Length: 474
Image 1 (cartoon, one colour):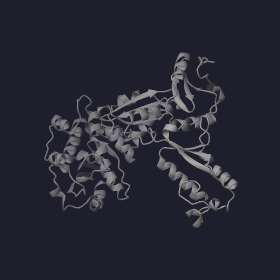
Image 2 (spheres, rainbow, N blue to C red; image 1 turned 180 degrees about the vertical axis):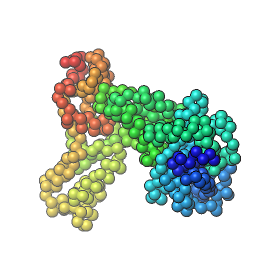
Image 3 (cartoon, helix red, strand yellow; image 1 turned 120 degrees about the vertical axis):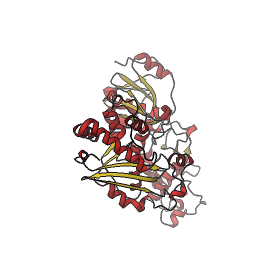
Image 4 (cartoon, rainbow, N blue to C red; image 1 turned 45 degrees about the vertical axis):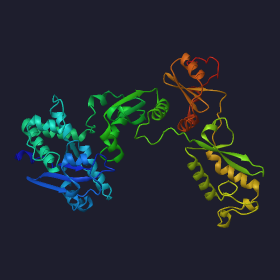
């Protein structure tokens, strides 16, 4: 090993073999580490029992079979040795998010917060050999004529990375390599398949960005008042936050759409998520089971909740509507929780069957104030029930018809809490209004309700329902 490698900080060339590509589901089967510290070089390798099956294609690729790992220790049994090998060293791996992500996730399952400075040799190759068409490990091996002792085995591939480092050192010298290391460590690391030039083109403006996986499959959709900063924050957090790590490992391309401001970005994000169903967006998904409680007086004069299902819902026009909920189960759980917390009668609420004049179960265990047996006056019970439900009340649309919310050069058209679209001129406003009302969306309802509380009056305009609207410049 050339002595000039030693002035560098302690280094650890790392490679792992796994049962698959998902750090939450799959496990490590082998780790190989070659370290350089204070003039000393050390190799460490270990097969380990993953505790899960090894798919046939992985066995064929690596040569690691279930029989080879059956009697080997698990990661947790080797964790102290692995920590000792990696402690205070720069973690160097090819497509480092994969190796680092798996090792970090394995430590995290043990309650250990493992962190390290990371260098990806894909990035290093791109930085030092920009004209090279590809930077996968097989290309690097062939281009630089590196010796391969055992491809797709952990220590063999870690040794290839060590040889590549020596090649860079010999070709560019210590100063240039040190400069490259500093550049890679200081700048937020981009995923291997994302070109830095593409990210540079993302504007620092409001809008929606879309991350794509293989075959342009939508992976994640987000919004920001400053798209470029937000996109970069995903990648800078990818070495610390597991969700961001998983995203960065899968993203292959990025698109973005500018909007006139924050409201436009929120509305567009909500619509695109429901249309494209990206795999990593949990919130803002379309719900076909939306429901709400509607309070009515039954034949006994008792205020009773009736569940209004999706097909019968008309939020913004229906009186005494409370919710809204994404499912019947959520609606029932919420009502049961409110009843227990506020000593409401679950029998009168229809949550349990009771006979006339008989107490509910809650009364017997002191969780009901006794409205079911007349100990609490019905008027008082009704007042308490309406007070408890008040924060869940679905607001009636407070305008005569649709409104326009001005933002930059656009007008966002809203009618009965439904987003009709955004317009740039009078004709587009008219077309959106005449196009009818789309399906009610709970997320948009919450957004618009929130923004109307603080929206300056000069940014909002009342629009006629079926007549040609006023100019958006009025």
